[in-house]
Image 1 (tube, rainbow, N blue to C red):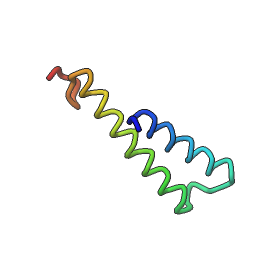
Image 2 (cartoon, rainbow, N blue to C red):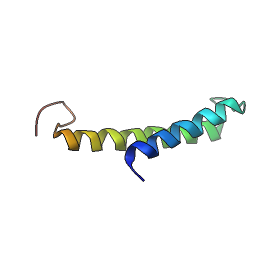
Image 3 (cartoon, one colour):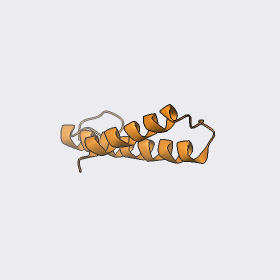
Image 4 (cartoon, rainbow, N blue to C red):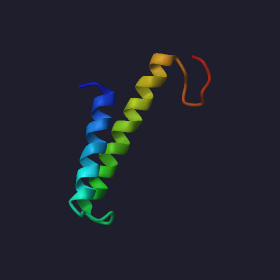
Amino acid sequence: MSASEDAFRRLRDLRDHVMEGVLVTESVYLQGGRAYDDALAALRARMREDLRVSDDSTAL
């Protein structure tokens, strides 16, 4: 699975929890939020690698 697909799926899962009525203080939401944050961080890292840009936006 690609990093972008993983991030999208994690976001969709989080959205589904919200639509089910899960509160932001519940552990299932917090775990889903962390999973999305981790997937998004991985996607950003992959994009920076592809663009050959470091975390501080300087060229590698």
